[in-house]
Amino acid sequence: MKIAQQLKEKNIAEYLIYMWQVEDLIRANGCNLDTLKQQLIAHYPQEERKALEEWYGNLIEMMRAEGVVEKGHLQINKNVILNLTDLHASLLASVRYPFYNAAYFKALPFIVELRQKNGKKDEPELETCFEALYGVLFLKLQKKEISPETAKAMEAISSFISLLASYYDKERKGELKLDD
Image (cartoon, rainbow, N blue to C red; front, side):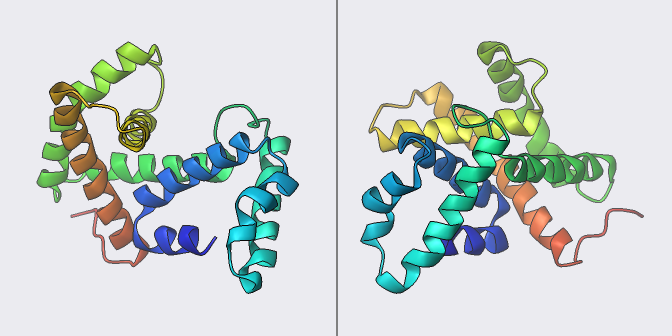
């Protein structure tokens, strides 16, 4: 819970990937709060457990209510993608951010290729980027090899998403000027 709050303040991209991990952690524990208490929450200091139980309990309820118990993402996480997509469109339309445009167009061929491979051609570009980053994270956690082609694609996508997250932070702080 604290980690999520800190990441949301510090880096929206890392926050979203973390929240996707939390969704999968909840699924891995059968969307069962008692199991999460035993497997996870019990390992935290006593004074943090009540807040964690409440947080995980609320997320479990939301996952059930939104029908994402088996797959998919919570609306709160989809909203992050929607907000980033709006900012992305504004940055592309602005003449003030040529480096952002360059980062996007460098990543675009990889995004298109990923969308063709995963069969989700209508999926939002940013969702494709986050799914790729999340997938590579899982490969690394499993100590699986990442091909040079995948590493090259992830470098471009990661740089692009990192820049977007940086602009998101600036916009949140009122430091981003999009118009002339």
